Amino acid sequence: MMFLRTFAATALVIGLVSCGSAPESNESTAKTGFVSINVPDKNIPPSPDPALPTSVTLPGDGGAPAPAMEKAKAPTTTLTFTKVGQREFVKTGEAVNLLYDGIDAKSTYVKYESAENGYWLEVALTKEPTIVEFSYLCQRFIVANPALTSIGFGNGLRYEQIVWTPRQDGSWEVRIGATERGCKSEALDDINKLRTKDYQKEVPKATAPKKKK
Image (cartoon, rainbow, N blue to C red; front, side, top):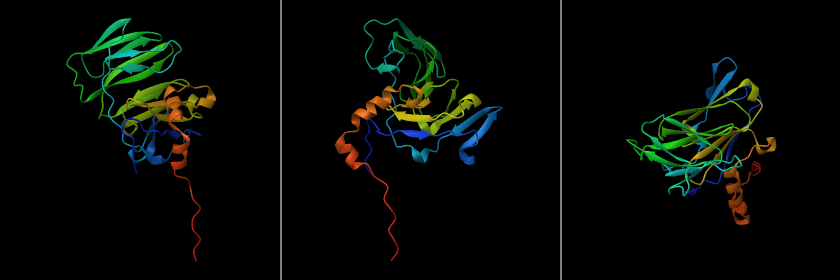
């Protein structure tokens, strides 16, 4: 079995039928009307750790953040992160340069949380557990590792799918709401471009069990 180190062309989808739909071992009620799910690591293919970007651009159409290792040519501002857990907000349509003071680049990454008119950026530890809490349809987070991510959502979102999609920089997008619900995903668009005819031929298919003689 071969894994692409730079881009894992697969997506993990968790269907939510009700608050009691997930296996008991992977679900717990954190507070009234709020459910948390821990994704088992055996389902997640390995991927490279995302690097700390030098700049981030938020498209004007509300698309996902576009991190880069080069400085933005016309930045709106420069954000300086000095500690793990620090959060900064960037508005849709802005490009910002990022500086890190006292941050270990080998053990951290930038976590993203979508909001109504932009994204929250947070410096987080790559190998430490993280929590994402969905509050509205089509909201998305970008994290380092699904296996270390706990998911929370309210009763109002209990009939929505939670979709994991790998990104080209080694991070993962987790979104609540399928594309059929009007949710967008640039990461999914990238995957679809990789699904060539040759790739489709190599995708393992389910086979009927052999009859006993």
